[in-house]
Figure 1: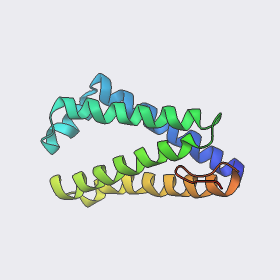
Figure 2: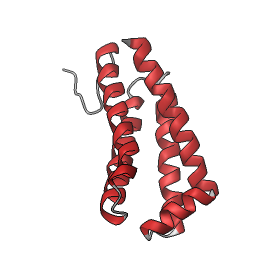
Figure 3: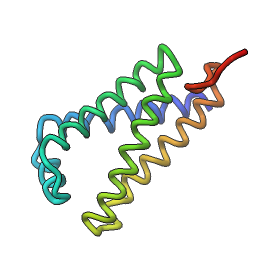
Length: 127
């Protein structure tokens, strides 16, 4: 289980590194996507910064396993927002499938992480 969790974690790091950096540097595809949603450029950059922050938390999770929960929480928020944008603003359900799949991937990674580590989830108080 721990190997599968690590594979999912590395895949999320790779995915969000690519997409986060693409948003920050303003790749043509990302600019077009955010323009189609009617979002300003600063929001695209902010989204990219949040994505990069999430991957930094996931990378740091190899040293301090509690930070995996921070990265996962950021990814959950991003994927919910992306799904809503594709469904409501764009009106395209097929484009909402990738963020839903990333949400499921993150949920599975987080669940496996909670089963394979002794570190408590954030906010857990020990007596």
